Amino acid sequence: MEGPQDTETPRREAVASAPAALSQALDALGAGAYVVDERGCILAVNAQAERMLGRSADELVGQDAHDLLHRGPHGQPLPHSQCAMRHAFHAGRPAQGAGEYFALPDGSVRPIGWMITPYAAGGDEERTLVLFHPQEIVEEPASPPETPTAPLTELERLALLAEATAQLTSTLDTDETLRRLGHLVVPRLADWVVVDLITERDEVWRDVVAHADGATLKRHEDLEGPMPPVLAESQWPLSRALRGASSTVTGPERYHREPDSGIAVEQRRLFDRTGMHSAAIAPIRGTREVLGALTLGRAEDPVAFTPADLPLVEDIARRAGLALDNARLYQRQRKVAETMQNHLLPQMPGVPGLEMTARYLPAPDASQVGGDWYDAFPLSDGATALAIGDVVGHDLEAASGMAQLRNMLRAYAWSQNEPPSRIVTRLDEAMEHITDVSMATMIFARIEALEDGTWRLSWTNAGHPPMLLIARDGVARFLEEGHGVALGTGLRARRPDAQIVLEPGSTLVLYTDGLVEEHGQILDVGLDRLRRHAAAYVHRPLTVLADQVLRRVRPADNDDDVALLALRAPA
Image (cartoon, rainbow, N blue to C red; front, side, top):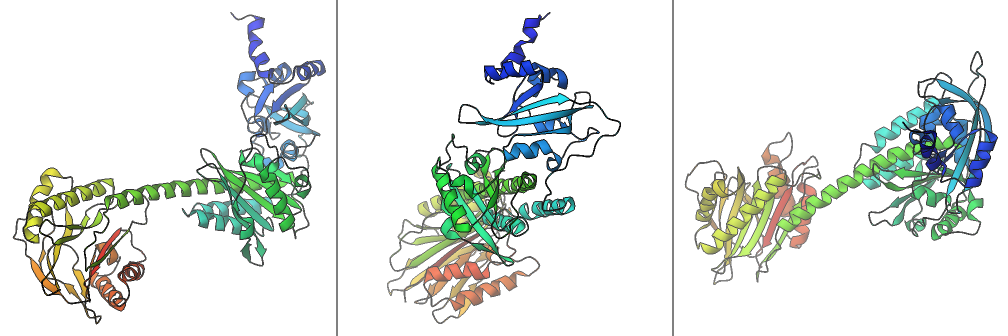
């Protein structure tokens, strides 16, 4: 059995972080007491508090004091906006009150009177001391204490939060999220909105400084850009918010004191340039880390922010944090997909006399690493091989299969001096045995210079959309010849070859079906769109033609990746 000395050990450890003199004074007063950090989490309690709350120090330390203890007269959770103690805590000022209720473990509540006092712990951290004592229970609980009037009614506040949730979570683009955030809060809550974000390299970047200009937002790019680092010892409002501390109401008078960091200097500049007389600053938190800080400022609006406004600002910042967290995750996934695909796709070889260029566009969904590919490489007999293909699927397996198929094609084409149809037949026969590819389409071609300066193109088509040939005068036609079945069908029908001599200055375009397929339309519609736009740009540089074809031909509702390979014979 534990003795009295053993049962006192947790309490002594919990209170050890408070100054010894303060602990003695609290015991002498006989009042319940606990200390919270800048986020409102309990750091230490005394024995009186343990007895009055019916909880041990282990059950109290580390908990959010408001969420754990603060209740309404009937035990219901107390909204932040109705808690006078929380208002005073956010304001960072001494205060006292009565008629509050603390929760007991059995679900009942204890009426208490209270007093809070903020103080500096060691000069580098702000803490708040909370003293409380029991009050007699009255027959009818008194009405909740009056709190500063919020600028919005409770119904308007709930409507704004619902709108914020719908607006901010319906996009995965960081810039669009910030734009929507600005329109949500300005001018309804403030004249100015400022967003500082912490980058993945742990640098601070002022992404948005904007104010209401009628019904629009006007950006001030001269106030945006890189910010000085956040110092751990800085206790000024923005630095605290960027470290994830509680939200704060502040004004220019705070920043006209001697600054303690470079960020404080930038904040002084912000207040001077914008004319803000009052600001509310809240941290923007993601699911794992602090992402930045949201600052709402008032200049034209004469009403200053009060602590009663902070819960709403916190709620909006919390929703913005979740949206930005999702957007960042999406962008990271998309970057991984694009990087992987680009590393799998080759650089164009230099072929004297021929112009060549290639493009690849990933699917809109960041997780969709596709099976579309292109290739161009020299052959052992001096000709150049061209290939475009599409492996069935939109995942890592399709991308892996695409790499296997491309490497096998290169090996067969280099080692076997045979017509394109024979090379593709060998590839088809081996595919089901030594790759993970179930089905694919492709065009394999070879192009070689003739003695008269012209170029001969030979090819076979395995179920792929036909190449587009555009003459120098703009006349375009699809090369329908040489068409056979796709790879992986199991059919062993003889594959045909086709051949043509390219006229001087003519342009050849190879592409995948994502460029021309459109939901609800037959394929001919997309093919005709490609023919018209490619012909219109045949007199422009080949790189311009490739860019414009992708921009103007690819359907708006495209959910597939696109590969494109273009070449031009010398004029």
